[in-house]
Amino acid sequence: MKILFAASECAPLAKVGGLADVVGALPKALQNWDIDVRIILPLYKTIALPADSRMVSSFACQYNKKSLEVKIFQACLPGSTVPLLLAEQPELFGSSGVYGSPTAAPNGTTDTEKFLFFSECVAKFLELSDWKPDLVHAHDWHVSLLPVLIKIRKLPVKTLLTIHNLAMQGLASQDMLEDEIMSEPTLKQDWARSGKINLLRQGILHADGVNTVSPTYAEEITTPEFGEGLDKELINRGDVIGILNGIDDVVWNESNDPFITNHYSKFSAGLKTENKIVLQQKLGLEKNAETPLIVVISRLTGQKGFNLLPPIMDKLLELNFQLAVLGVGEPDLEKFFEKLAADRPTRFSVTKKFDEQLAHQMYASSDIFLMPSKFEPCGLGQLIAMHYGSIPIVRATGGLKDSVENIDDSLTNTEKATGFVFEDFNPEALLSTFQKALTLYSNTEVWRQLQNNAMTRDFSWYTSSRKYFELYREIISK
Ligand code: ADP
Figure 1: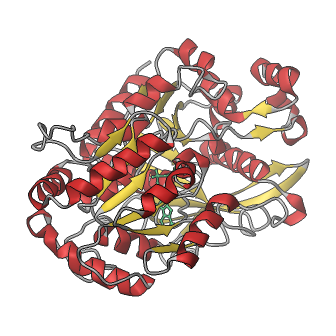
Figure 2: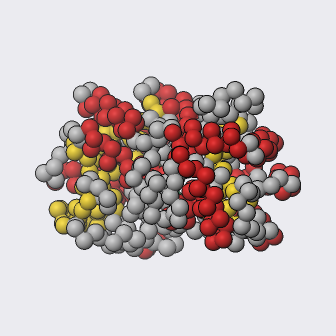
Figure 3: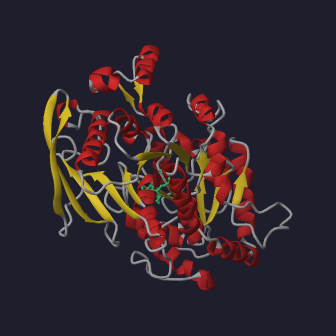
């Protein structure tokens, strides 16, 4: 079986969020099922062409009534034998990172135009390449036009669209698309309805298969509350399943992680404390092994639920904990965390950047990981945290609900529980979950048990990659 992954992100070369983790890890796991899997990605300014790369194809692709030269280089995804195809086009891909603001891009090129062009490049590559995949696995709105292009051009390849976040849909205007594409009735329909082409919607309508990244999110998105205006299209398909993401257990391995000072395992999770002291020192927090250290490693957005914190902050300040935040995002949230850190620098710290090394150190040093999302397709953060023995506080939504087992109030499930899960998206519910978690933290025996449960859970890609393999087989045989 031959599969081509098409995506905007891929760890470790181009990472903004969980999409990169998935695209960088799932192909490696698919190789275990004897699949010839390759990845295609734009060659952004931020990616250095790997030394082992060689040009395998070059062609002209239409953009804005102009013909642009594209070169495809092949290398190996770092740390693996998975072939990685990098599409080089200096003007459109080579002038910015993964996502760029319209003003930063040349001639005001938007991300939408950039990724529409990337989809064109992939379609062209499929036509010209000697290597012909059985299925193109497209990820998110950036490459959602691919199923449409493949259909219009009658290319002999099946398509699977994975939705990593339904809230991001990609809206194109008519002039960004060639007449050939605009003649497709579903695009005309979008245009007539709203004056924009909804790229994710087109992908949902045209792909041979559609899935998302957790069973609960697969159900949620068929409701108006979580459907982001596309619930009807998803219901009409009737085949949208959820496959829970895994984590790359080579990249995320607490027993040999190159970024952390003290390695440990579930048998020596107490050693996390030593990492905590190192991190407290690094971030300027009070060095204190006893104080529970809570971390946030996330985009700072409303989706992630951090706006539940300001209304309860006065109450939270009465509790004993430290909070270290790593992330960038909405200005109000950044300011909120900055002020906390400025007012109480030995209790709160905020690092406003994307820092892979610090992220590893924070997972390895923390006692608690906070992700109280309003909605969460899967969430990679809580999986990594549990793997590193950092107990998650999460809200019961999407993949958070599917991956974290709540400890009940009467502690009857200490043999299985892996974290704290609250139901209602409101500040009071979060406050009482903080109180519960911090109270339980002082019960060393139960806490160790929680850590052991979390670190024992299998979050590897093994099981989920098998499910993708089966899904590919089903789609290809249709
Ligand atoms: P998202 O909705 O952003 O995809 P996920 O929890 O699925 O959220 O995945 C986030 C991924 O990005 C995790 O691997 C997390 O460790 C990483 N991450 C998020 N913010 C940062 C940051 N500021 N620095 C380093 N890694 C980060």
